[in-house]
Image (tube, rainbow, N blue to C red; front, side, top):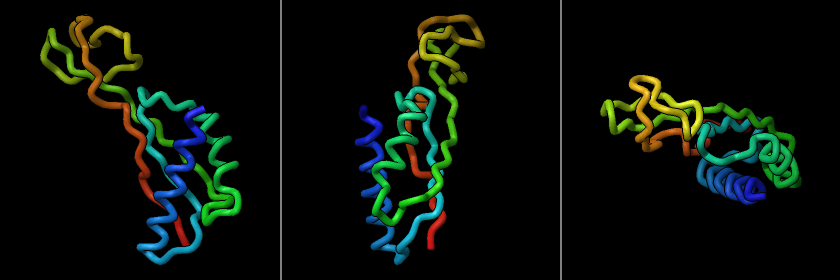
Length: 113
């Protein structure tokens, strides 16, 4: 389950931010997760609760903001929204698409003390 490793990296980033910005407690974490990031949100929530125990983020609320997918269509030469990786272009129906958005996972912001 790579979601545990993601949570461990998230904790590291929050600890570094706490040291450099002088906060000692995280109350809420808002994450932007792209539709194509390959993250199972429920597994991430479980891992978050486990990994954050005993840390500056113990008991913090995890808010997940799902970001849409998008792709470049080689047929109509447009960037288009995409619901699933294998969907055809919603603009022209073409099937030659290259995903170029929705693969990221980013800390949007933290509520801290």
